[in-house]
Length: 141
Ligand SMILES: [Fe+2]
Image (cartoon, rainbow, N blue to C red; front, side, top):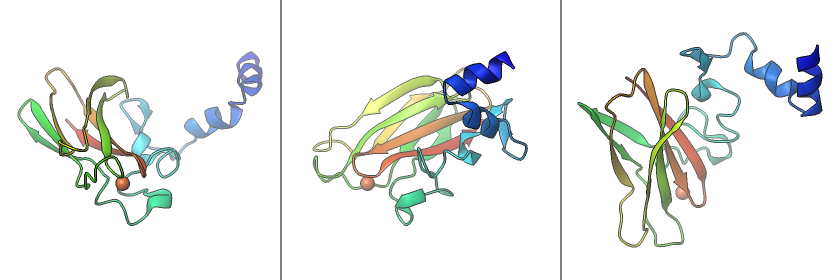
């Protein structure tokens, strides 16, 4: 009861309820963001492009693994500062920050590489477009 009142005071009762509702996919004991209600709303995925439907191919970060390295690529144009991929972000299975790569749209392609030694179960890559927001993809390890 105390917890509920506390959450209500923060305006989080609806959020807490939705995060624990049956039928929402869990990964490693936590909510799988790819299957959450946030996909298609706060960020976008191949299966949940939300208001950016039709732009998936140019925004979803593609993740290729080779041993303990991954390469993240976004098939997006780099049209100077007009329209470009600002950065890639690598998150671990718990959505904790691991690394990021900033891009200069005048000289860089939206490709980054990371050493994933020590990471387990899954990782997430975020690609951030200056016009079309944040796109998430997941790789099982
Ligand atoms: Fe874009």
